[in-house]
Image (cartoon, rainbow, N blue to C red; front, side):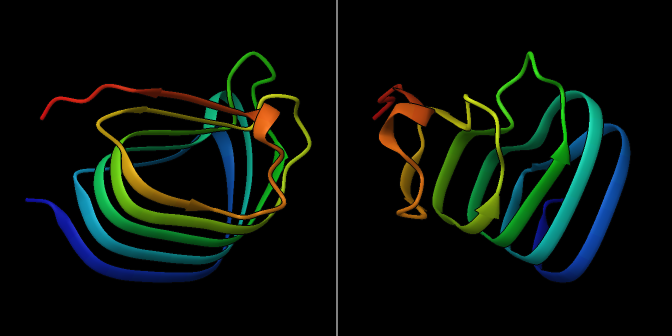
Length: 116
């Protein structure tokens, strides 16, 4: 059963892997701190209406893109503190994703596959 209508605030996550959100709708996350060793810090797939505000990636796998959206619609990412060269990757049938204006275009990788 998909997760729906969840709000999380003031979260500090540490461990081998970062945050994974899949098959979810109407998720709001405010003030998220992540420190992980393997894979992307935030991976969101097959979701609708995901809002992340005040994201702080303290440490993550330097070989991976810190934030990955795959098949995500109607979502936003605002107010963040992330330093790596690669920042966010958007792929699949992703639509209507609002990114904070402070993200330089050269740090966003987009591969959209139109399946309509």
